[in-house]
Amino acid sequence: MARNRLTNFVSSVYAVLIFGFIFLPVIMLVLFSFQDGRLPVSPFNGFSLQWYEAVFADRKLMSALLHSFLVATISSLVACLLGFFAAYGLARFKLPGSALQRGLLIAPMTVSYLIIALGLLSVLNVLGIGLSLWTVGIGHVVINLPLCFAIIYSSMGDQHINIERAARDLGASDIKVMALVTAPMLLPSLLASFFLSMTFSWDEFIIAFLLSRFDVTLPVEIWSLLRSGLNPKTNAIGSLVFLVSVVLLIVLELFLFGRTKKS
Amino acid sequence: MAHVSLEVAERRKAWSFVAPALVWTFVFFVAPFLFMAAMSLWEQQGGGIVRVWKLNNYIAFFEKDALFRGLTNSLEITAIVTVFSILLAYPLAWIIAERVPQKYQRTALILAILPFWTSYVVRSYSWLLVLSRNGVINQALLNLGVISEPLELASNRTATVIGFVHFFVMLLTLTIYANLVQLSPNYRRAAADLGANAFQTFWHVILPLTMPGIMTGAFLTFVLCIGDYVTPQILGGNNELVLPQIIMLQLGRRADFPMAAALSIILMLVVTAAYIACARWLKIERT
Image (tube, rainbow over all chains, first blue to last red; front, side, top):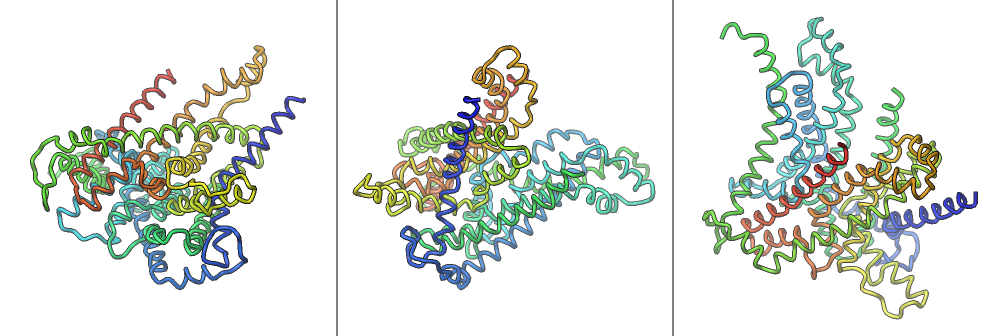
């Protein structure tokens, strides 16, 4: 018993220390976003919302926010759709070289974002295609397509085949089967891959940095804010981004993972 | 052509489903990559690129200390980060899996990786709030009277390592926890029945069984850490540049795309080597 108590004590101390390490920077970030002063470091002068007002008044930040949202939504939709079609084709039909095709589709996952961005950038340069939010979106589809494909493919179990066959026997076309039978059955994994792609695209920096020019996404705009050093405004926008991610995570947990557990 | 066999028709249909994703991957991933591999053999001269097909960029990499140090810095930092992350994450994963009541485990895990979801750029910035000259650690030490002058904690290798370890502890906690909860309690009982004490059980039974979780997390850590530009750029200062920083330097001031391409190929070869080592290790372990 004495040893068990000792283990419990050591465990608790360790848990407190490591949680402190994990949360220290986040606490500093959020706390000093409310700083009533020009520096986001102690002493804490008092509670103020002025930096949040500054964030919402900043046209560049607000348009970057909109750009990020658009790029994340559209690129995730495209990645999800392409991934779903490919998973359907590879899981429901016998194709020669299907292992090779799966490998090719997964391959971008093993390559650093920096290298993917650099490859696209050099090709765009040579072809004389200008950089824009579209090129950022293309890059984000490249990194999210393997993820969507892998998630959806792994959930395409054989247990659904008979239901699809029944629908086809009743006269439904392939597209109809996919839209009205397969997609609803796979809804949890479709949504999971869509939201996961959204969070990755939303947070992605290096591709967005290298493949954009005049219109930029939020992480790139925050990056240029960093040049001004420690600034409570950066804390405020950082805290807001964190809040969005946490809300997204809670939504995923409550409506998606919670639901799959029950069924 | 009038009688296309059923099989061919099926196959054609299957292709039409897979083709869009394959074409996308080929046009926007494979082709650019091949182009970059070709470009790494060309040369930047004056204002333009000369298509000479020589290994000059790779030779320069091994000869110029400033370039080669990038790789050794990257490898050193990545190795330190991987080891520290495993050492810090394992006990946390163990505590969540063994000491936290089943009902609260998922909540504890989500809480433990919550800062994982802060924006990547912002997470590095928030370490500046902790480590900089007027950051919280210096303030605390000054107030306690431990030091009289603020310490330079940011803008060096230690700061980069701390920023990385913070991120990867959360990732490894996830992979190791997933591995730990899969283990049947019978292993522990069997070991106890055979007379093993708690430490022996851990060292000879639990640890080897959680090696796959550790290796998966360690591989992810290696790949993401060695390819990252943001954390070292924000926290590391300008003294010890890592490979991604040197690649970005080629793009910026010098606009030397062939050299950047060659360095990227080297970075990719290192990652591939790590992947092969990991895959082989996991295979050996399973058989």
